Image (cartoon, rainbow, N blue to C red):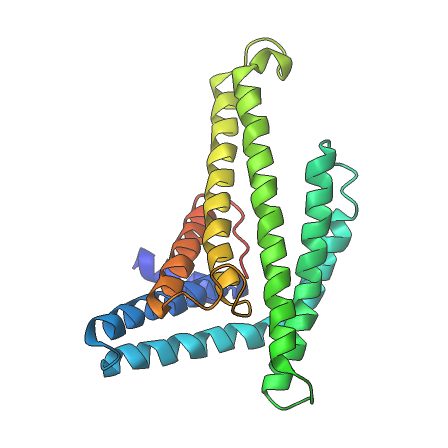
Length: 238
């Protein structure tokens, strides 16, 4: 019953529901892709799972039509990051927020073009959208790497960061933050693999992933996000 209550509580929250839909969608793509791979594209169950995964992805795209204001509020709250001590982390965060902010209107235009609401080339706008997502992921990876390096130096030279010897509580807090950043790094790397795959063919491995590999990368990223949320971390994912 406790697990059921937790699931119901998660489904009542937009962010938690989105994470569950994302995990389910990529999981279906992973299983469906594997079934099609083994049956040489003859598995009806595999095809159905891929269609279901596509519909869940479309559901998330429609729901993101209402995310612009919340992203704008976050961007405005962070501003130019004047409270951030590290200038490199500060500007990485500023440009990351800018990429995320631009992502939403580009995706809305691409979605509206696909739905025949407006007359424009949707492929061009999907390329813009995916490129912004990739830039955001790269900046997130850079931020995580720099943060982990700074925290490692802090642990190795504690006398420069604490008054006297650091307590076990301080060490545990730093180790917990490092763990969260490493998980965020792995999640962003998995998503970046998919982002490149969805770019126009000819760029790196764009268009070369089979469905099961896209599902695997997305599932790994989603499960890491769910774990980080349960562990008290921040796991916002597009």
